[in-house]
Image 1 (tube, rainbow, N blue to C red):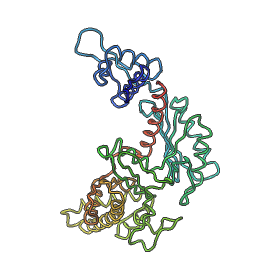
Image 2 (spheres, one colour; image 1 turned 90 degrees about the vertical axis):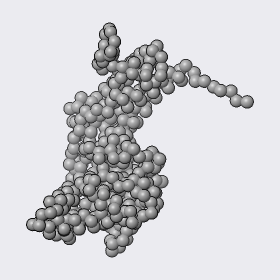
Image 3 (cartoon, helix red, strand yellow; image 1 turned 180 degrees about the vertical axis):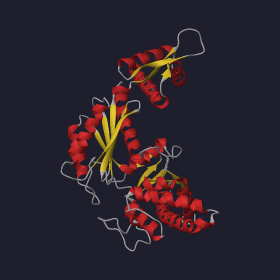
Image 4 (cartoon, one colour; image 1 turned 135 degrees about the vertical axis):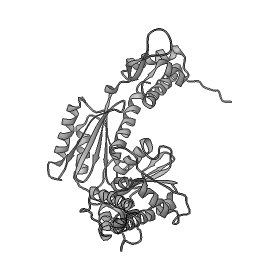
Length: 405
């Protein structure tokens, strides 16, 4: 015969405190009345709760709200932003972008530093971070998240050498972990973009989806049942290595040439544009995005305009072939994962927007028996930095909110 057990007063207080803190994260500042209505707690319980959280340094009065009653205005309570700060880093081949946020999630600083791979690369990044931290008035970081291309090993937190990526990436991670008096978490950059799309972007209504990153590199973030899936070694979503038709070869264990990378990377997009008689740059992300945007504009401008029909036809053919290439990869993803929804991200995916997503969706339908919606990325700013900030804030809040128990 089992006996029901009730939570001790201390445990009940800790649970209520955590619920209130999560509500202040989700809803923003609230009055005591608002907290009572949302938690169902009594007036004395909410009063005690706010007193405890105030003494812990996590909650403070941030203003007043006029209510429809006589007497003084109601106090509004919010998280103490200065209680903790987090850092996010987006590490690319040619540089590092970074951003800082306080505990409320407000961005308090950001910056970028180019990196040429020289001997002083890591030192330059650390110096830029420290200068920006001081300029933002941040005394120290509670948590930092570094997003980087390649494999972020979920078992060890290491960044193994992968696919010819710069060696200074691993050196920077080690230097950050040695120099910061705070946890420094590592995550694949595309996974962070997927987190951002799920939390504040195109798939807030979905718990199962795949984000495909189309840019200098090719990758995917796999979210199933609300959980980011990294794979055994952190390699889930390395779509650049996916064998696809039309590449003239196969990828190898050390080179993604011959895989989907050869069909849809920024360099491949620029080459495809030139093959259709369109102007395109040298093959970097900005040039590929510009080629897609320009082609869409030329196609629209040519509609009903006899003088622009030639350019419009070439642009349409270019976009059609690009959509076909992406659709083949999505059909492969759908056959294995059946995500029901795919988001086109990265520089090329974001440049193509809803128009490219619709083109791709139309070509996926005859390739797969599985219904797969295709959407365009909608995260404002940098999806990688957004995802890194969200991840860092989750970790910092988990640690701080748990410590109140």
